[in-house]
Image 1 (cartoon, rainbow, N blue to C red):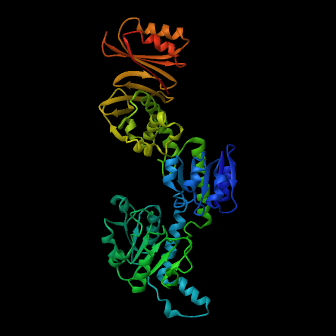
Image 2 (image 1 turned 30 degrees about the horizontal axis):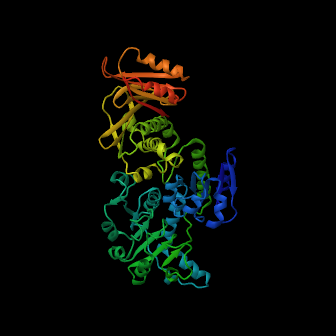
Image 3 (image 1 turned 90 degrees about the vertical axis):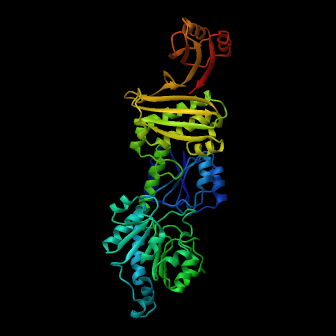
Length: 530
């Protein structure tokens, strides 16, 4: 498997890749353009980038074997995640690798902007001694507003508290309990936070909701003399509005590490403002962070390619190794249930309901759901179907996917049930996990109790419950050279309707089905391959 390392990462990360016998590692010595990347990507299984190289749709379309793109850092702005999802490429990043380095840079910038350290330093280098020109402000007893109380925001809060600052935050996804645990006051709206803050620091992702969120309207609601910091993502702070706020005196200063356009143009208006201190996107630029990100992305990609473990993925549910082992039996069961129902259901379907029962209701459901959909959709979609694109494919087909949790008492401690609806028609199958070896079994088929080993070739038929019919089928199978591996029988009542399911070593020939069709008591004969 070919691993292409497009941007410089820590030597330890490269060594980790090279230590795997399954990998062929290509380290590029310079940043390549899109056209230059195309021939190199043609046989790549994984590509590793930092912030320089862009992995576009065109690059991924030129790489039919590509399975994963790894970003040695937090942001994935240089990767077309939407295209990756459509093409079945997992996109991973290393969100924890630069947490401390970015938090430390943020607080360093806060100290610098409060005491005008860069400006004073520049003045000294020019031979001046202008003590009165660089009067600063203490940060003790000042209020710091943190926009985004995730990993980095929390680390910044700890440092600010150590310096005697009052810390408040806005984060629509963080609970009051979490904020209380880190001794941060959590506001429900930005309108409440803005007027009370002396400093505001941004630690959010760049999304449609956050782009330009600190704009002229926001500055008008802030305390006069507020200072702004952004070491998160360019584009969250409206740079033109920031410049206006500084020139008007509403904003006393800003410290920026990221910009809407990078590299920042030489004639950018912000460069001319003495109140703005700037660094060239240095958030992760420490030896420790680079080592951490390089090693982490190498380990993440290796675990995925060699062991199927997905962690810190942008477009896939992530599981650590321990959770993956617990969920793994249900992944197999879910895929087999989906694959079986794809061959029993009508071609056109509008709804799939996946029920997690008993102990299975407590496992991560998203990975199992994806395996169910993969098994179901690959019957028609073939090799184009994978765990990354199953949701978009289901949506494009007009199939609604519902997940249900059930804790009702049944014959099984943990179970999974899948129902496929096509108008008023429904086909369904349910299964559980048996024994210490975690063997999957199908235990319900259209509501009837069965015990089917979900593998190989399955022969299914409905028949009248009469003496000798099993022997009749066995004789026909033998006549056509087909061996029966397992058998399960179910009936509604003696002499009523029965369901027969056989595990076969091979698919019966057409002549066998012609003979079976002659028996009036046998109907709905199907063969499914799992």
